[in-house]
Length: 213
Image (cartoon, rainbow, N blue to C red):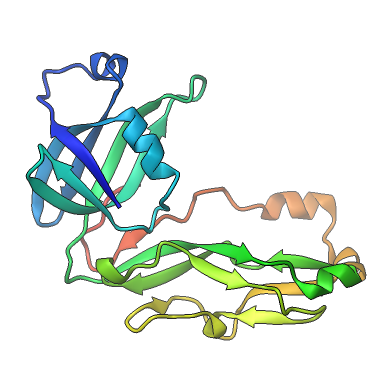
């Protein structure tokens, strides 16, 4: 995926840029100096409809310089939902990264017709690879799963050089019996304490070139 950007002077107010339909952004990384740019909001919306946080994205600045980046942080106004700012991490092409790759479910499990429930054990899988091999998502076809069946981390279609950072025998998805889930469900008070904070786990470069999320 590619998106166009233009350099912007720091003297240009962010509010004025937004009124003109642009989103201010900054590119940064271990091998590049911070570069302040702006991106058309409509181009950003189109990009976000097609990529995930682990999708390598090309940013062409002023029609000549191309940077290979990952979407690191997207700031959105809490009320208007207008894009406020974008952080783009320029990855070292030779250094492996560890990122959270989203799991996308394909198909309908056979066991659901028999009263089972599809349980996605890992919505994201931490994965290590060099930037160009980082998968945008892990597609998991659950069509053949009956009640009691699981797809393990090791059963997913891992490309060479792409290494999951979870135990290989962990289940990625499973089809559980509804009665078993009802029996094993924790009390409401305990369940509330166990809910993870959404977005708490972010992608982190391996080895020190770490951009804040």
